[in-house]
Amino acid sequence: MYTDIHSHVIWGVDDGAETKKETFRMLKEAVADGIGTIICTPHVTPGVYEFPERTFQEHFRDAEAYIQQENLPLKLYQGAEILYTENTPRLLREGKVATMAGTNYALIEFSPTDKREHIFDALQKVAGCGMIPIIAHMERYPAIGKIEQVEEMKNRFRAKVQINARTLTRKVPLLRRGFFDKLFREGLVDYIATDTHAMEGRGTCMMAGMKAVAEKYGEVTAKRIRKMAEELVKQNSEFRIQN
Ligand SMILES: [Fe+2]
Image 1 (cartoon, rainbow, N blue to C red):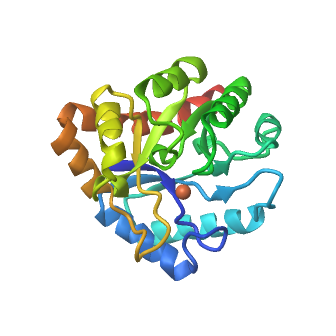
Image 2 (image 1 turned 120 degrees about the horizontal axis):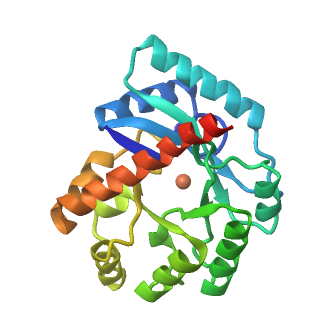
């Protein structure tokens, strides 16, 4: 079973699922798509928009209850897709923004127009909080288009790279194609996730995405990526044991 580390499956907290019914359908759909673990990552914009934390907790509990009631082989964890703002480092340090499944990994999103300098500066600040930044859907940032840049982000800030499964199931604009091929071939892609928002349009497609990885870049690469997400969640239990 796959681990999906990027999902807007919880309804009523962002532009993801809109209703409880849609969440429940998406949970079943995830299982049918081979997913056994989901880190729920609603959009959070630290210090700019107030995140509806109470609603999220209530809806998350409802989703867990549904999984139990339907006996679905699915485990949910909490996380957030954090749009980087100047408040992000402080709020991360204060524990006021959710990390990935309670670990020190944080899923960070940028604006597609952000410059390389801004992205590097942000990653440096997130890393300075003792966090490991996971760059959400790397394919969206034209400012990062060279292998050396990705290597530098990894070496200096321990950054991880997440790519959306959907991107792999359709043609990437030719200009960036060579870059993604290299990223995969050099072993620089860490996570493939669905970033699912809805039943229709932005539904789950983990199996298709991972199949595309295996076909294009080999089984070894696909297995390594699959394991990375499993390991991330495993750190959650280790973290809890220690604390
Ligand atoms: Fe997302």
